[in-house]
Length: 126
Image (cartoon, helix red, strand yellow):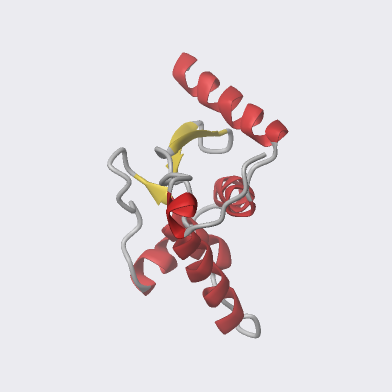
């Protein structure tokens, strides 16, 4: 196993990958979830910490950070208007996609990567 000993070694680990397709069973549609960066994780953690005592739309904010188009651009508008709109959507789909996005924030296990790949395969065949 190679040890990372320099900044260049660290940067050589690469950049985030392409957005991952996830087939949402509740929506019967595929969404693209970005490969989260450390910055995405920090934005999510700061939002959670700032709002832990508040009635905040946590799932909507996570989707605002993580759902992207093919170019990797967010599909939910920034700010409260986008959050409010997603927060009013039916819970089943929002919760399902938020759960998948949360797993990516934590770093997927091998089993989860396989499940995402199966979901991706299912979306291509439908």
